[in-house]
Length: 180
Image (cartoon, rainbow, N blue to C red; front, side, top):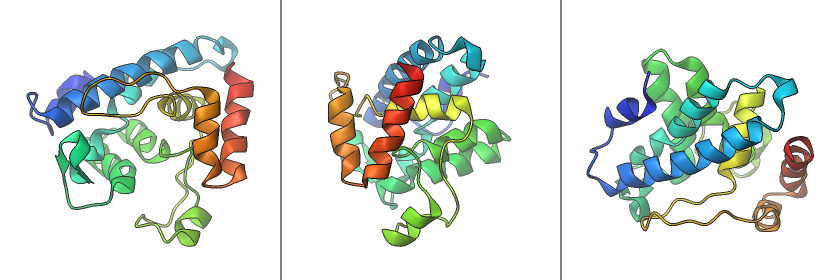
């Protein structure tokens, strides 16, 4: 299974959305692999991490994110569970769950209700070590149409997470403690 071939099933290889997705996926994959190598005692599956990191944002084309060349009808926050739906249809349940569980530091049922998010009411928090590593690595990079994004600092990430609650920044800090 080649993640780029799967992405190509949904994206025109000449589109800006494809280029943004591939660029971001490679950044997240490298950060995730580097992170996984720091915790060999947790036995992270490196091949799975690479593939899942490349595919974690596959659902963005279904959202309205013109800055990434995406003209879908759904709000951007839906890209995770929509990516899950795409990969589930291909029989890739484990990879599908990474799509759904990587948004923010994970989204709880309480978050969905409190913020009235347009998401299915279910727990969308990363559970496996691989899901946590990819979610963690994803926080360090933003997507943009220029295909340039520098790695964010830990402080920048924590500051952005505080707006969603101290518990979100605390969860990220727990990952820093684990992975660094």
